[in-house]
Image (cartoon, one colour):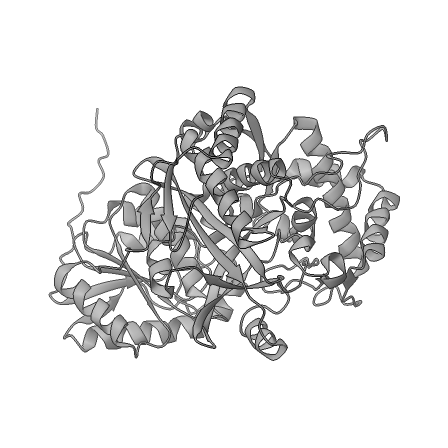
Length: 545
């Protein structure tokens, strides 16, 4: 017999003093087109920094004349592009927009040369958000990399970091703010955390996952082999089931949700143009999704639930963001079982993990149980680590996420919550956010992630501060004014320390009534994670009681 063998490939050779550059893009072409000018500027900054050291940048792909941009916009495209890159060449992944990591992960996994991830540090097109997600994916797969970021390329820190990478293949960051959890002494908080861990291991919990892998977030998928030893199991669900259940919710049931929100004080900026404005029709479908999510969660006995939305449902239904924030709030519109005999999850929050980020799922579930046992408001949410600047002598982060922020995080609750339409560039079917400004107060922040083939959690303390209205408005306009915002000051952690360490574009936040209670709650949370076998790391100024 005659067999057809594939033709052998001849490995390309990298030119001397040349680094190859790839840009990981969005899956939504509207976002790629809109963000392309910012990407061009970032690549100019990178090229200038390399040229200052006598190096050149070779772009691994050109600009597509049909789309008008030069992003890698699918996994298949990424595979094709990486075939042309010399395996041992220094490689830069430059991103200036929200990016889908899985477009480039296959190529990065097999690349043998040094890898540098680079982002702009900006609010409007936040490459730093995409950078943190990409770094978390590389960390999960165990692929060594270096990382750096800059506002405009003019800072000496950025230029020195580029020089270090070109000379040594690495960029070293300060991680002196991180320490492993020391042995905890006897305390009521340790006793509580360990008891709750034992209960979870004994009784187990179920998280409902409506389709995994939103936005290519490989880092946000926790394999069963890591998840199950915590006593947590997945119920794998399809978003088609959620859409089907939405069809069974009556207009009367949906409108009852809307009336409850209006009577609670929430307002909505509505119009009549479906393509660009928030409409009553969009809101009715969001209310139906809320009812449907609770009924399906009840069907499967879920302890937490995550809706993927941004691929799939985004072309079919209004955004899930209003639904997510309501589920995370203890006070929310009541929903009955289909026969009307029971109020579902009555008097409780049903933790929702935005974008089916399973690191958030674990964190939200554990936080909910600890804060509830302590008699505190358990409403917690993820935020995008979005951007930040100095204000009045301290670095104030913008934490901002399109969905899942509970109204209790606002000073006036629902009275301070507004529903704004989602941006048509990313959300063609519209739908309302839960917009507002997070109240000043003490918070615990955290992140559950995978590193060295195991589960880890970073824990820290922070304060949400109040800024003048004009500064709040400036920051909202510099990012996404339709999204809820939190002005966050991390305790004992600089901007660059946090960026270098944080293994996700998401950070989990939860309030405590005062600093002393926040320290106690953090101690209980650390004890619970440690009892479950998760490696606990304290970040910044943290004082376990």
